[in-house]
Image (cartoon, rainbow, N blue to C red):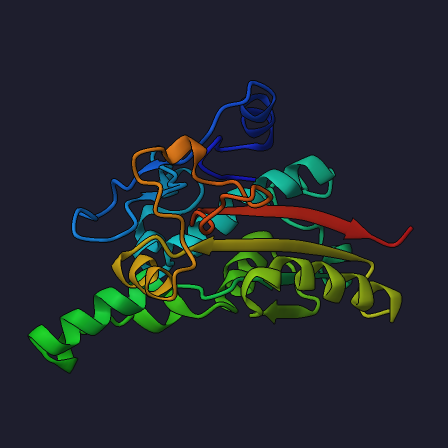
Length: 237
């Protein structure tokens, strides 16, 4: 997994055990004019550590985070061969089930602005593939040589849970013996923050970022947007 507390499951667990909080003031863009100026941002992630530098521009940030999480999950599963690929004898019997609420919202925002300011011919040719939610499954299946079922769930906050459910159903129905499941999201951008803030869904405790997320408190005033990815491997038992 990867989130604002850590770049892997060990660091994330240790941070939680120490009572640390990954919520702070937004750094990825100037949020000074926004009613919400806090989020759970990942600030020290280098996508070139998990993918070829030439491919970074082809993948939205949510896809990059998904690749980071899936590489950790696949390594922990013990499935990978000497070339860090799914063994050929298993490839057709292993699939991917992914989930994301919005996908490449930041890419959609940036390319929309670019299109209106510079014209349609200047839109990034990799824009579409960098924004589609199902490209999580596309990139991960290519990365590991997985050739089985490839499913995507786009159901807001429930997308990751639905991805697990669909993976379980695929195995139970005989469609695969193993499934790589991943949920990823990265929508901390002007449109993302502005949109959720406009419906009063986000906490406005900008002066107390570490105390802003309190879902079960009587004084709660909204959730705090974060970004990250989590992955696991399910298999027939």
